[in-house]
Image 1 (cartoon, rainbow, N blue to C red):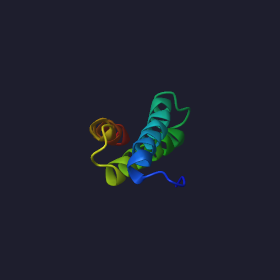
Image 2: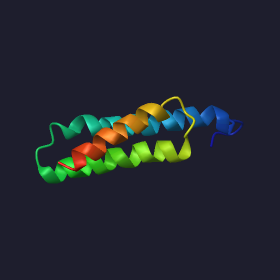
Image 3: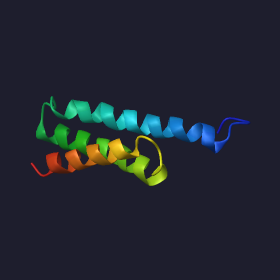
Length: 78
């Protein structure tokens, strides 16, 4: 961490970064050129939403992350 920075200062940024990583992968799923790429993007997106939920369950983005994860699980089944 940053010298002198508390976890409370850093946590929201880590949660936000995880959410953004997950979203970046998620938005590419629809335009994935191959089924393999689609599954890879779904897995990567799910990984970051799950990370956010595991590490920052009380973050303001946790609810959104949970909803997006449910959508990804439905996509994975197709």
